[in-house]
Length: 93
Image (cartoon, rainbow, N blue to C red; front, side, top):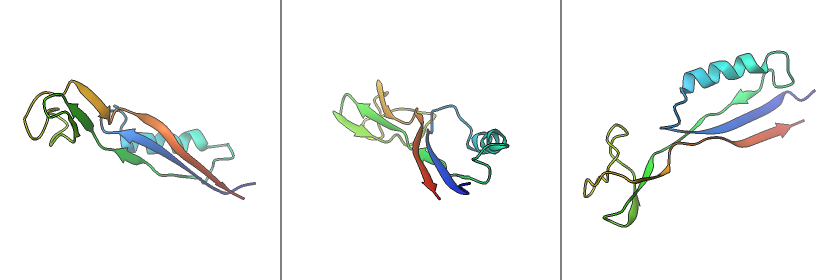
């Protein structure tokens, strides 16, 4: 049986997923499976917006105020930060 696993989910700051809740539920979901004893590594994906005024991608200063940090135009498009995906699953025998 393989005892060295790790799962690396990318979790955007706006994904709506609580980091501690994800870690806790992962442990419960692994009980009684071959993933018992595996390690969950959670990568937080920062927020990135596209500013129509500046015509470039920017990281807002605060996630509570999603606007361009340079010109303060409200963001119309979020590039990154809402995702929840498994970025990697590494297995070692």
